[in-house]
Image 1 (cartoon, one colour):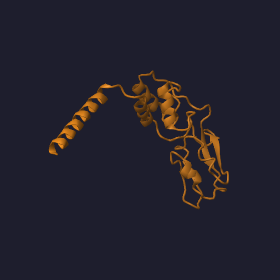
Image 2: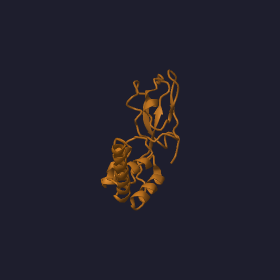
Image 3: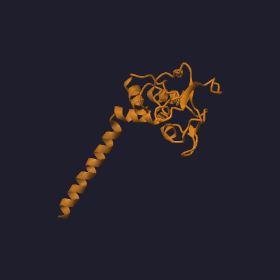
Image 4: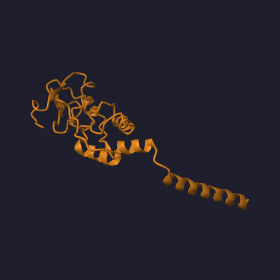
Length: 166
């Protein structure tokens, strides 16, 4: 019986060493590269790049159907990191034509927290059943807070007219 156990253990050890050696020598799969690109993105899931989230955008970047400069929340630093990882040329960040931020009409806000829960960057503050407000310097303009608001008290305003400048 011990011979059988030792034989199986030896076969498992040899198979494990062979798999380890093969994984080091074989090229990385596309999925691994997608995951590495995804890790460099800010994970705001804001859809400002034109994709529904960071992982679909990462997939498109690896497949070559999207440029590396479409992520406003990631900024120039993300463009540089993506260019370094993928061996591509650094490109200027594609900005919105008119950057905007969310503004809450506080007189209409009922404190339902739906907008706060939808905000991917925690730019909305407020307690349940109390009015909420947007920290404009943190808002990425993704508009994800508008749809969940049951009283339509959130609007998007150009960054300059909202009191901030770029």
